[in-house]
Amino acid sequence: MSDAHALGKSGEETAIAYLKKKKFKVLERGFRFRRGEIDIIARDNDTVVFVEVKTRQSLEFGLPEESVTPLKQQQIRRLAEAYLATNNLYDVPCRFDIISLFYSRKDGYHIHHLRDAF
Image 1 (cartoon, rainbow, N blue to C red):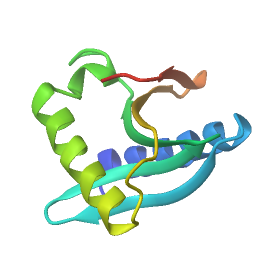
Image 2: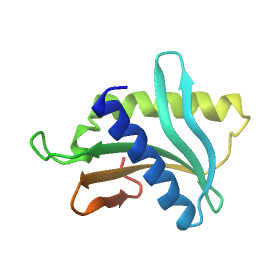
Image 3: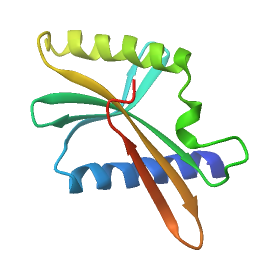
């Protein structure tokens, strides 16, 4: 496993722990459909939340959330539609969140949760 892959997996674990602490119910992890994947699908009260997790340990290429481009957002929306259809969830409120994580060996994870990010 590459360092970047390990960092991403560790970031997702941290994001799940964070969501559970905030009383979200995690429904799915790594939902795949065709060529795409949604990192986390959770429920926040009555709302289905599609969560994109971005983890970095350097700001050399910008903040983690800045990598969720309009093209990536469009892909996540399509995947969310597939998830909702597959699970017969047609009139359920939903939203798209980003959990941005910055990791430093000294301080651990800094979490920034962007609710209703796009």
